[in-house]
Image 1: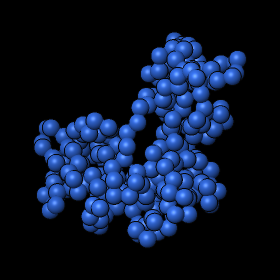
Image 2: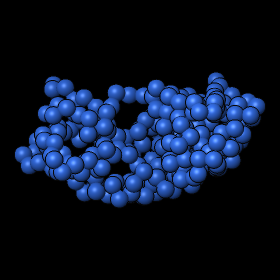
Image 3: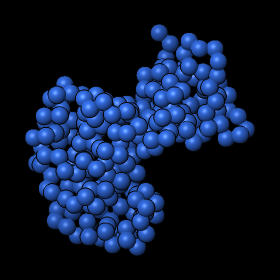
Length: 230
């Protein structure tokens, strides 16, 4: 079993998780500009923080000027721990405390930094050691990196290709409310029928004749996986 990550501050946690998310499954280098945009801070502030994180022992990031940043092993462990906390908390808030799925992200963002190992274990046990959060995201196992899966943004799905919604972005409560209104939840089968000239696309849900028109911005919040015919 891997060693428990050491304690970090809330601001450091935010940097580590943002780098993890921006790096993606390919573990790509993340530019300071991309990180500044994600966190809503100035680029010089990002550079200063990255230099501090790289100088820590053990180092939390691997940073080279003009080449961007990647997470070091210790930073990656802490970032995945935060992701696990966040997704467990979202599910606990949704299933046990009956928050709506558009409310849980903001609450989990506040709480994820502070819960203890005991609390994390207790929540996981109450929920039956779940694998998926309310938005369809995989919950990493304790002390392990998350598992990537085959999914693409809906906007990149070829026309008339059967697919199933695997997850949705939880970053916008407004978008989540609209997705719920339209019935676009994880597990729903669909296909893209048309790409329109007005920055939108039209989809058809499995078993329905009418089309649903989505803006590209809303479609970018939806991720799908192949759904081959039985």
